[in-house]
Amino acid sequence: ALARLVTEAAAEAVASGGRFTLGLSGGSLVSLLARELPPALSAAPGADPSRWLVAFCDERLVPLEHPESTEGAYRV
Image: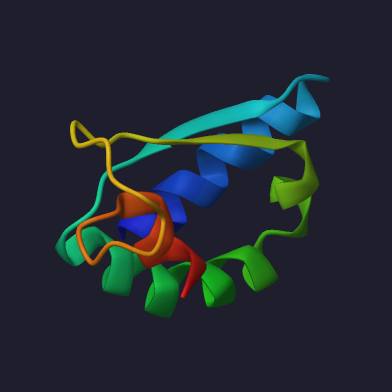
């Protein structure tokens, strides 16, 4: 349901001529979105990820290679 909600909001933002902005946290959200977002994007071509601005919300200042790096977790 979360992936569908994200793609629907993205498609609406892109359709209005703008960008879609998404802040991502770490933890269990990483594996959930890795599994669920690609099929949701396939079902909503108007969501156009090239029009997204993604921010990684992480209170820790650690290198990308660090196991607690939120951005690093999404890159894997």
